[in-house]
Length: 278
Image (cartoon, rainbow, N blue to C red; front, top):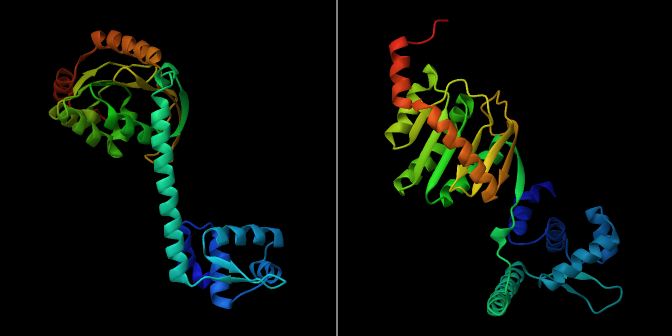
């Protein structure tokens, strides 16, 4: 059935499982069959075919015969798809009704707010960090703080995070960044200064790298040794929505901020010195 891969893909995207799509297409192409022959054709078990056929019957895409042994036939494609659409519409209406009922019931209950419960998650790749960071930046309202090294600063810029940061500044958000600014970073740092970020230089920082969003959520580095600029590059970071942890990191940030110097001053020093000799 390799030639039918596109048709199968469309059936699956329409809401069928892979097994349902294969069984339905086979019955469409080769006509009605009993479960035993269908299982043989699909190279699977009879019990498995029975479950698949029952699911297709429930979707209105297959009809069983009244004779014995039972033979199963595919419903005409257009009719079957219409039946599937109607079923989905019915399920959506029922879900909407249940949603309204639950909303009404919730008004009578006294639920514990979810923000009283802190959660933690380990991020295992650059992609994980970028996904969480982008989502957090999009929902941030007031402040973003970051204490990162040069490699991390360049990596997040490469994968588009600073575009989200730019939009955050345009919304009135405040961004402050601490990093060890080298000569190779001057262009990037100047670009970030130009869009309104407040950046300071902290020399030879070797502590924990972290970012904090609105003093609520945070990402702290556990093991970050980026060797390749790839979304699949492995690392270990701790994400948390614990405000206590976020405020501890903010306190650390403020202490480091007092010991740092403005990025503009650092850039001026570097440009006077010129590029490092190789």
